[in-house]
Image (cartoon, rainbow, N blue to C red; front, side):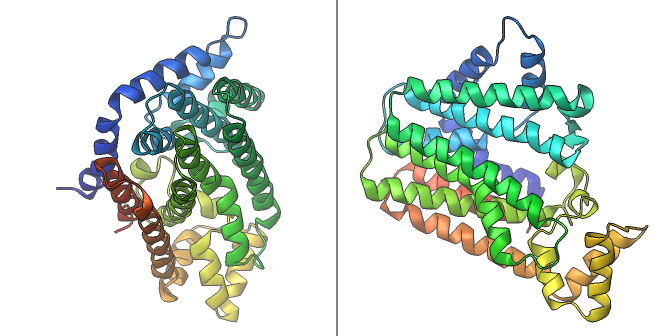
Amino acid sequence: MSLDIVSQKPLDRLAAALAADLALVGSMIRDRMASEHAPRIPQVTAHLIEAGGKRLRPMLTLAAARLCGYAGPFHIHLAATVEFIHTATLLHDDVVDESARRRGRPTANLLWDNKSSVLVGDYLFSRSFQLMVETGSLRVMDILANASATIAEGEVLQLTAAQDLATTEAVYLQVVRGKTAALFSAATEVGGVIAGAPEDQVRALHTYGDALGVAFQIVDDLLDYGGSSEVIGKNTGDDFRERKLTLPVIKAVALSSPEERAFWVRVIEKGDQQMGDLEQAMAIMARHGAMAQARADAMTYAAQARAALSVLPDAPLRAMLEDLADFVVSRIN
């Protein structure tokens, strides 16, 4: 049995358990991404939303709400909100990064143009706020509004830290907690809030989402140097070509000899990349155990995510969320 088949099981189990809710989320997404006057909006949105994404973040919201005993309708709105925020950030990210592939397909900015991607992303952000308002919960709106601001802040911080070899692991984690983990933690936290869960459970759900998001991003960064294009949905080595200082690179730079550091200055800071440089970068990382160290960090965060759930009800959904933390790091076994 292949690793891909094994690693898909936790997500498949979660999707099966939430199938009825996910169908309602899908219907709400299709309804709310419609536009009477601008047909390009549903065209661009559908290209990305229907490209085979796992809808992990909406599932986190649904699972958190159900685990906390919620029986009302608004977890559907919140799951759709989370997916719209995520999709909007992807549309904007692909413009910023000048990406050509997303989820194994050409990016929207490549098929249409940058203007369409930015403006449709803005539309989805607006739709997300309309959806969260419908829940009538000021606390939910506060959590998701803060997450949206944190995501943007993380992206800007990444811009300022990019190509700077002085970037530390602390700055990297601040970026990750902004651009990735903020939406994970908001997705789980609002599920508990809408369900009226006790404060210790709401805090636990936030901690779970934060740790899961950090682990998820570290693994994504590792896969860029060792995953297949089919698994990661983009070209292997894209982060290197875009001169991104991800965790394995930061760790390798910190341990590099003067000669190796000169290599990093050339390829990252100066952008003078030549044939064979990706392979040399991977060799340096392997020499210093940077990949293994980053993987250990991801496993630590996954363990923190699992541990956070101990205060939640002992139920099948909790076990699935625990397994999900293992799934995130299993992609780099």
